[in-house]
Image 1 (tube, rainbow, N blue to C red):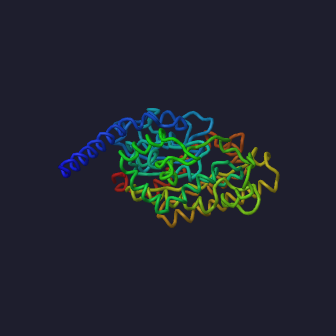
Image 2: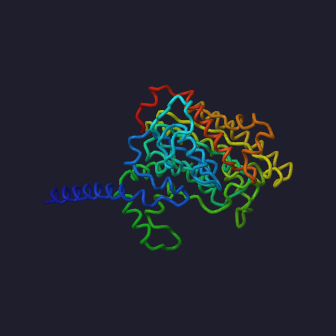
Image 3: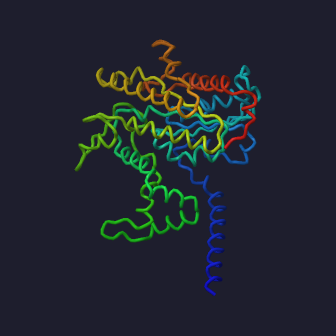
Length: 374
Protein backbone atom coordinates (compact mmCIF):
# COMPACT_ATOMS: atom_id res chain seq x y z
CA UNK A 1 0.00 0.00 0.00
CA UNK A 2 2.81 2.38 0.90
CA UNK A 3 4.54 1.66 -2.39
CA UNK A 4 1.36 2.48 -4.31
CA UNK A 5 0.97 5.79 -2.47
CA UNK A 6 4.58 6.72 -3.23
CA UNK A 7 4.10 5.89 -6.90
CA UNK A 8 0.87 7.91 -7.03
CA UNK A 9 2.63 10.84 -5.39
CA UNK A 10 5.51 10.66 -7.90
CA UNK A 11 3.04 10.45 -10.78
CA UNK A 12 1.17 13.49 -9.45
CA UNK A 13 4.43 15.45 -9.16
CA UNK A 14 5.44 14.53 -12.71
CA UNK A 15 2.01 15.50 -14.04
CA UNK A 16 2.12 18.81 -12.14
CA UNK A 17 5.63 19.50 -13.46
CA UNK A 18 4.58 18.89 -17.07
CA UNK A 19 1.42 21.01 -16.73
CA UNK A 20 3.34 23.88 -15.12
CA UNK A 21 6.02 23.77 -17.82
CA UNK A 22 3.34 24.04 -20.50
CA UNK A 23 1.58 26.86 -18.65
CA UNK A 24 4.78 28.84 -18.04
CA UNK A 25 5.88 28.40 -21.66
CA UNK A 26 2.54 29.82 -22.80
CA UNK A 27 2.43 32.77 -20.39
CA UNK A 28 6.10 33.69 -19.83
CA UNK A 29 6.28 36.12 -22.76
CA UNK A 30 3.11 37.87 -21.59
CA UNK A 31 4.86 39.29 -18.53
CA UNK A 32 7.91 40.89 -20.09
CA UNK A 33 8.94 44.16 -18.37
CA UNK A 34 7.96 47.43 -20.03
CA UNK A 35 11.64 48.42 -19.85
CA UNK A 36 12.12 46.34 -22.98
CA UNK A 37 11.18 47.77 -26.36
CA UNK A 38 7.55 47.15 -27.35
CA UNK A 39 8.79 45.69 -30.63
CA UNK A 40 10.82 43.15 -28.66
CA UNK A 41 7.94 42.24 -26.36
CA UNK A 42 5.67 41.60 -29.33
CA UNK A 43 7.94 38.99 -30.95
CA UNK A 44 6.74 35.39 -30.93
CA UNK A 45 8.69 32.21 -31.49
CA UNK A 46 6.58 31.24 -34.50
CA UNK A 47 7.52 34.52 -36.19
CA UNK A 48 11.27 34.08 -35.77
CA UNK A 49 11.92 30.33 -35.51
CA UNK A 50 12.96 30.01 -39.16
CA UNK A 51 15.03 33.21 -39.18
CA UNK A 52 18.71 33.88 -38.64
CA UNK A 53 18.50 35.26 -35.09
CA UNK A 54 20.77 37.98 -33.74
CA UNK A 55 20.22 39.18 -30.15
CA UNK A 56 21.70 42.51 -29.02
CA UNK A 57 22.05 42.63 -25.23
CA UNK A 58 23.04 45.89 -23.60
CA UNK A 59 22.10 49.15 -21.94
CA UNK A 60 20.56 52.40 -23.21
CA UNK A 61 22.99 52.53 -26.14
CA UNK A 62 21.44 49.30 -27.42
CA UNK A 63 17.94 50.37 -26.37
CA UNK A 64 18.30 53.68 -28.21
CA UNK A 65 17.70 56.43 -25.64
CA UNK A 66 15.18 59.01 -26.92
CA UNK A 67 15.17 57.41 -30.38
CA UNK A 68 12.46 55.77 -32.44
CA UNK A 69 12.86 52.02 -32.77
CA UNK A 70 13.82 52.26 -36.45
CA UNK A 71 16.76 54.51 -35.49
CA UNK A 72 18.33 52.07 -33.02
CA UNK A 73 21.36 50.08 -34.10
CA UNK A 74 19.61 46.66 -33.85
CA UNK A 75 16.87 47.87 -36.21
CA UNK A 76 19.43 49.37 -38.61
CA UNK A 77 21.47 46.16 -38.47
CA UNK A 78 18.35 44.15 -39.30
CA UNK A 79 17.79 46.25 -42.41
CA UNK A 80 21.42 45.78 -43.41
CA UNK A 81 21.37 42.01 -42.91
CA UNK A 82 18.20 41.06 -44.72
CA UNK A 83 14.57 41.65 -45.54
CA UNK A 84 13.04 40.46 -42.28
CA UNK A 85 12.75 43.26 -39.74
CA UNK A 86 9.96 44.57 -37.48
CA UNK A 87 9.89 47.71 -39.62
CA UNK A 88 9.15 45.60 -42.71
CA UNK A 89 11.54 47.61 -44.85
CA UNK A 90 13.81 46.19 -47.54
CA UNK A 91 17.55 45.79 -46.86
CA UNK A 92 19.31 49.14 -46.65
CA UNK A 93 22.69 47.74 -47.64
CA UNK A 94 23.37 45.39 -50.52
CA UNK A 95 27.15 45.21 -50.12
CA UNK A 96 27.00 42.76 -47.24
CA UNK A 97 28.41 39.27 -47.63
CA UNK A 98 24.95 38.01 -46.64
CA UNK A 99 22.56 39.75 -49.09
CA UNK A 100 18.96 38.69 -48.69
CA UNK A 101 19.68 36.86 -45.43
CA UNK A 102 16.36 36.16 -43.73
CA UNK A 103 17.40 37.64 -40.40
CA UNK A 104 15.79 39.10 -37.31
CA UNK A 105 17.74 41.31 -34.90
CA UNK A 106 16.26 41.44 -31.40
CA UNK A 107 16.80 44.52 -29.27
CA UNK A 108 17.31 43.33 -25.67
CA UNK A 109 18.71 46.62 -24.43
CA UNK A 110 17.45 48.11 -21.17
CA UNK A 111 18.17 51.63 -20.02
CA UNK A 112 20.46 51.96 -17.03
CA UNK A 113 21.51 48.31 -17.12
CA UNK A 114 24.89 47.03 -15.97
CA UNK A 115 26.57 43.78 -16.95
CA UNK A 116 25.46 42.30 -13.61
CA UNK A 117 21.82 43.05 -14.45
CA UNK A 118 22.31 41.78 -17.99
CA UNK A 119 23.61 38.49 -16.63
CA UNK A 120 20.54 38.17 -14.37
CA UNK A 121 18.15 38.40 -17.35
CA UNK A 122 20.26 36.43 -19.84
CA UNK A 123 17.97 33.40 -19.93
CA UNK A 124 14.80 35.41 -20.53
CA UNK A 125 16.07 38.10 -22.89
CA UNK A 126 18.74 36.23 -24.87
CA UNK A 127 18.79 32.44 -24.64
CA UNK A 128 15.02 32.12 -25.05
CA UNK A 129 15.44 33.21 -28.69
CA UNK A 130 18.02 30.44 -29.39
CA UNK A 131 20.27 32.95 -31.16
CA UNK A 132 22.85 32.34 -33.85
CA UNK A 133 24.70 35.53 -32.84
CA UNK A 134 24.76 37.40 -29.53
CA UNK A 135 26.09 40.95 -29.31
CA UNK A 136 27.05 42.03 -25.77
CA UNK A 137 27.53 45.74 -25.08
CA UNK A 138 27.98 46.94 -21.49
CA UNK A 139 30.35 49.24 -19.64
CA UNK A 140 29.00 52.79 -19.66
CA UNK A 141 26.76 52.19 -16.65
CA UNK A 142 29.16 49.75 -14.98
CA UNK A 143 32.00 52.29 -14.95
CA UNK A 144 29.75 55.26 -14.24
CA UNK A 145 31.02 57.17 -11.20
CA UNK A 146 27.50 57.52 -9.85
CA UNK A 147 26.50 55.25 -6.98
CA UNK A 148 23.12 53.48 -7.12
CA UNK A 149 22.07 52.01 -3.74
CA UNK A 150 21.09 48.58 -5.13
CA UNK A 151 24.24 47.98 -7.16
CA UNK A 152 26.37 46.51 -4.33
CA UNK A 153 23.52 44.11 -3.44
CA UNK A 154 23.20 42.96 -7.04
CA UNK A 155 26.92 42.34 -7.24
CA UNK A 156 26.93 40.39 -3.97
CA UNK A 157 24.03 38.26 -5.22
CA UNK A 158 25.98 37.49 -8.40
CA UNK A 159 29.12 36.54 -6.46
CA UNK A 160 27.07 34.36 -4.09
CA UNK A 161 25.97 32.15 -7.00
CA UNK A 162 29.09 30.01 -6.50
CA UNK A 163 28.14 29.01 -2.94
CA UNK A 164 26.85 25.50 -2.21
CA UNK A 165 23.40 26.78 -1.21
CA UNK A 166 23.14 28.82 -4.40
CA UNK A 167 24.16 25.83 -6.50
CA UNK A 168 21.48 23.67 -4.85
CA UNK A 169 18.82 26.31 -5.44
CA UNK A 170 20.00 26.77 -9.01
CA UNK A 171 19.55 23.05 -9.58
CA UNK A 172 16.12 23.06 -7.91
CA UNK A 173 15.04 26.01 -10.06
CA UNK A 174 15.09 23.75 -13.12
CA UNK A 175 11.86 22.33 -11.66
CA UNK A 176 8.83 24.48 -12.45
CA UNK A 177 6.96 22.77 -9.62
CA UNK A 178 9.62 23.82 -7.12
CA UNK A 179 9.63 27.39 -8.38
CA UNK A 180 5.83 27.62 -8.18
CA UNK A 181 5.56 26.18 -4.67
CA UNK A 182 8.49 28.30 -3.46
CA UNK A 183 6.95 31.48 -4.85
CA UNK A 184 3.55 30.71 -3.31
CA UNK A 185 4.98 29.97 0.12
CA UNK A 186 7.22 33.04 -0.09
CA UNK A 187 4.16 35.26 -0.57
CA UNK A 188 1.92 33.65 2.04
CA UNK A 189 4.22 32.52 4.86
CA UNK A 190 4.21 34.89 7.87
CA UNK A 191 7.33 36.82 8.80
CA UNK A 192 8.23 36.11 12.41
CA UNK A 193 10.91 37.92 14.39
CA UNK A 194 12.15 39.61 11.23
CA UNK A 195 13.09 36.33 9.56
CA UNK A 196 12.19 35.44 6.01
CA UNK A 197 10.02 32.39 5.27
CA UNK A 198 12.07 29.34 4.38
CA UNK A 199 11.70 29.50 0.57
CA UNK A 200 12.81 33.14 0.62
CA UNK A 201 15.98 32.64 2.67
CA UNK A 202 16.88 29.59 0.62
CA UNK A 203 16.50 31.45 -2.68
CA UNK A 204 17.95 34.70 -1.36
CA UNK A 205 21.35 33.99 -2.87
CA UNK A 206 19.96 33.70 -6.38
CA UNK A 207 16.80 35.82 -6.33
CA UNK A 208 16.17 37.73 -9.56
CA UNK A 209 17.32 41.32 -9.61
CA UNK A 210 15.51 44.16 -11.30
CA UNK A 211 16.70 47.31 -12.95
CA UNK A 212 15.86 49.56 -10.04
CA UNK A 213 15.16 53.26 -10.25
CA UNK A 214 17.61 55.95 -11.08
CA UNK A 215 19.09 58.09 -13.83
CA UNK A 216 19.21 56.58 -17.30
CA UNK A 217 22.95 56.45 -17.68
CA UNK A 218 23.68 60.14 -16.98
CA UNK A 219 27.18 60.69 -15.66
CA UNK A 220 28.16 62.16 -12.35
CA UNK A 221 24.77 61.93 -10.63
CA UNK A 222 25.92 60.33 -7.43
CA UNK A 223 23.58 59.24 -4.63
CA UNK A 224 25.44 59.46 -1.36
CA UNK A 225 24.99 56.43 0.92
CA UNK A 226 23.54 57.01 4.35
CA UNK A 227 22.88 55.06 7.50
CA UNK A 228 25.05 52.64 9.49
CA UNK A 229 27.94 51.20 7.56
CA UNK A 230 27.61 53.71 4.74
CA UNK A 231 31.36 54.23 4.76
CA UNK A 232 31.88 50.59 3.82
CA UNK A 233 29.77 50.77 0.66
CA UNK A 234 32.84 51.65 -1.41
CA UNK A 235 34.59 48.45 -0.40
CA UNK A 236 31.46 46.40 -1.06
CA UNK A 237 31.17 47.92 -4.50
CA UNK A 238 34.79 47.30 -5.27
CA UNK A 239 35.88 50.92 -5.09
CA UNK A 240 39.12 52.27 -3.61
CA UNK A 241 38.75 54.47 -0.57
CA UNK A 242 35.98 57.06 -0.46
CA UNK A 243 33.62 57.76 -3.36
CA UNK A 244 32.94 58.45 -6.07
CA UNK A 245 33.14 54.84 -7.15
CA UNK A 246 31.83 52.92 -10.17
CA UNK A 247 28.44 51.28 -10.11
CA UNK A 248 30.06 47.87 -10.66
CA UNK A 249 33.56 47.03 -9.50
CA UNK A 250 36.13 46.04 -12.11
CA UNK A 251 36.20 42.51 -10.67
CA UNK A 252 32.40 42.25 -10.75
CA UNK A 253 32.35 43.57 -14.31
CA UNK A 254 34.87 40.98 -15.45
CA UNK A 255 33.03 38.13 -13.72
CA UNK A 256 29.66 39.17 -15.17
CA UNK A 257 31.01 39.36 -18.74
CA UNK A 258 32.87 36.06 -18.37
CA UNK A 259 29.79 34.24 -17.10
CA UNK A 260 27.66 35.82 -19.80
CA UNK A 261 29.94 34.59 -22.58
CA UNK A 262 30.26 31.14 -20.98
CA UNK A 263 26.49 30.64 -20.64
CA UNK A 264 25.86 31.74 -24.22
CA UNK A 265 28.53 29.31 -25.42
CA UNK A 266 27.15 26.50 -23.29
CA UNK A 267 23.72 27.09 -24.82
CA UNK A 268 25.22 26.38 -28.23
CA UNK A 269 25.38 29.87 -29.77
CA UNK A 270 28.20 29.80 -32.36
CA UNK A 271 29.10 33.51 -32.41
CA UNK A 272 29.48 36.02 -29.56
CA UNK A 273 30.50 39.63 -30.22
CA UNK A 274 31.66 41.92 -27.41
CA UNK A 275 31.59 45.68 -27.94
CA UNK A 276 33.74 48.23 -26.14
CA UNK A 277 32.01 51.38 -24.92
CA UNK A 278 31.28 54.38 -27.08
CA UNK A 279 33.20 57.57 -26.15
CA UNK A 280 31.81 60.33 -23.95
CA UNK A 281 32.27 64.00 -24.77
CA UNK A 282 30.47 67.30 -25.19
CA UNK A 283 27.91 67.96 -22.47
CA UNK A 284 29.22 65.09 -20.35
CA UNK A 285 32.57 66.86 -20.11
CA UNK A 286 30.92 70.19 -19.30
CA UNK A 287 28.78 68.56 -16.58
CA UNK A 288 31.79 67.29 -14.64
CA UNK A 289 34.82 69.12 -13.33
CA UNK A 290 38.09 68.44 -15.14
CA UNK A 291 39.51 66.12 -12.48
CA UNK A 292 36.40 63.98 -12.28
CA UNK A 293 36.00 63.82 -16.06
CA UNK A 294 39.59 62.58 -16.36
CA UNK A 295 38.92 59.98 -13.67
CA UNK A 296 35.79 58.87 -15.51
CA UNK A 297 37.64 58.62 -18.82
CA UNK A 298 40.46 56.58 -17.25
CA UNK A 299 37.93 54.26 -15.66
CA UNK A 300 36.20 53.63 -18.98
CA UNK A 301 39.61 52.88 -20.51
CA UNK A 302 40.16 50.29 -17.75
CA UNK A 303 36.76 48.71 -18.35
CA UNK A 304 37.43 48.58 -22.10
CA UNK A 305 40.64 46.71 -21.34
CA UNK A 306 38.57 44.25 -19.31
CA UNK A 307 36.17 43.79 -22.24
CA UNK A 308 39.13 43.15 -24.54
CA UNK A 309 40.63 40.62 -22.12
CA UNK A 310 37.35 38.76 -21.52
CA UNK A 311 36.66 38.59 -25.27
CA UNK A 312 40.10 37.05 -25.86
CA UNK A 313 39.83 34.56 -23.00
CA UNK A 314 36.26 33.47 -23.81
CA UNK A 315 36.76 33.08 -27.55
CA UNK A 316 34.37 35.94 -28.29
CA UNK A 317 34.84 38.40 -31.14
CA UNK A 318 35.91 41.88 -30.06
CA UNK A 319 34.45 44.93 -31.80
CA UNK A 320 36.47 47.95 -30.65
CA UNK A 321 33.69 50.50 -31.04
CA UNK A 322 35.52 53.03 -28.88
CA UNK A 323 38.53 53.13 -31.20
CA UNK A 324 36.37 53.27 -34.34
CA UNK A 325 34.41 56.23 -32.97
CA UNK A 326 37.55 58.01 -31.75
CA UNK A 327 39.07 57.77 -35.23
CA UNK A 328 36.48 60.32 -36.33
CA UNK A 329 38.17 63.01 -34.23
CA UNK A 330 36.37 65.67 -32.13
CA UNK A 331 34.59 67.25 -35.10
CA UNK A 332 33.52 63.92 -36.55
CA UNK A 333 32.43 62.63 -33.14
CA UNK A 334 30.10 65.53 -32.34
CA UNK A 335 27.29 64.53 -34.77
CA UNK A 336 27.34 60.98 -33.39
CA UNK A 337 26.65 61.91 -29.74
CA UNK A 338 23.45 63.29 -28.29
CA UNK A 339 23.26 66.53 -26.30
CA UNK A 340 24.10 64.72 -23.05
CA UNK A 341 27.43 63.60 -24.53
CA UNK A 342 26.75 59.97 -23.64
CA UNK A 343 23.96 58.54 -25.77
CA UNK A 344 23.98 58.28 -29.54
CA UNK A 345 22.19 60.15 -32.28
CA UNK A 346 20.65 58.23 -35.21
CA UNK A 347 23.96 58.76 -37.05
CA UNK A 348 25.84 57.24 -34.10
CA UNK A 349 23.50 54.26 -33.97
CA UNK A 350 23.98 53.72 -37.70
CA UNK A 351 27.75 53.76 -37.33
CA UNK A 352 27.45 51.26 -34.48
CA UNK A 353 25.35 48.97 -36.70
CA UNK A 354 27.97 49.24 -39.43
CA UNK A 355 30.69 48.25 -36.95
CA UNK A 356 28.75 45.13 -35.96
CA UNK A 357 27.94 44.28 -39.56
CA UNK A 358 31.59 44.63 -40.54
CA UNK A 359 32.51 42.22 -37.73
CA UNK A 360 29.93 39.70 -38.97
CA UNK A 361 31.17 40.08 -42.55
CA UNK A 362 34.72 39.55 -41.39
CA UNK A 363 34.30 36.61 -39.05
CA UNK A 364 31.40 34.62 -40.47
CA UNK A 365 31.65 32.46 -43.55
CA UNK A 366 28.61 31.34 -45.51
CA UNK A 367 28.78 28.00 -43.67
CA UNK A 368 28.59 29.74 -40.30
CA UNK A 369 25.38 31.51 -41.32
CA UNK A 370 23.66 28.17 -41.84
CA UNK A 371 24.62 26.83 -38.42
CA UNK A 372 21.89 26.20 -35.91
CA UNK A 373 21.36 28.52 -32.99
CA UNK A 374 21.11 27.61 -29.32
